[in-house]
Image 1 (cartoon, helix red, strand yellow):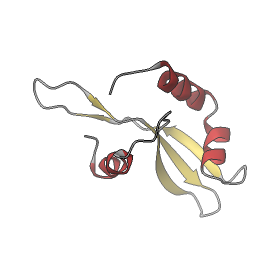
Image 2 (cartoon, rainbow, N blue to C red; image 1 turned 120 degrees about the vertical axis):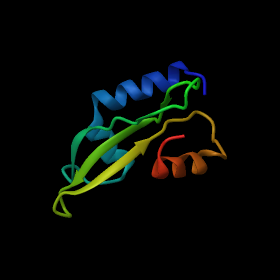
Image 3 (tube, rainbow, N blue to C red; image 1 turned 90 degrees about the vertical axis):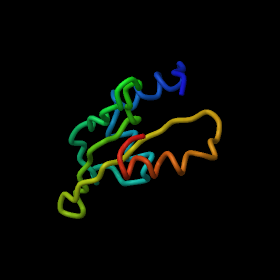
Amino acid sequence: MPENIYDQACRYLLRQCAVPLLTWLLRLPPGQLDFVEWLDTRALPWPGQSDRICDTVAHLRDRVLDGVPWAVPVEFQIDPDPLMFGRGLNYLRGCE
């Protein structure tokens, strides 16, 4: 998928203000989650193929549930994508 300014700006803003934006996007009260780190989502490509990198994935811990860990992929889009559900499932099995 080609890179665009909108995607870059959204990822930049998310990385600068991770906790406030993630609590807002997930509709959680402030203070319910702890941000741990951004997960490395690089996958090993087949020889001759380009690098495979999934979108921004946050490692979070839920304070209310005694620190239960969460891996939360975040995707920003201007237009709806009917294939987004399938892309989300790929996050669960390993990036494609």
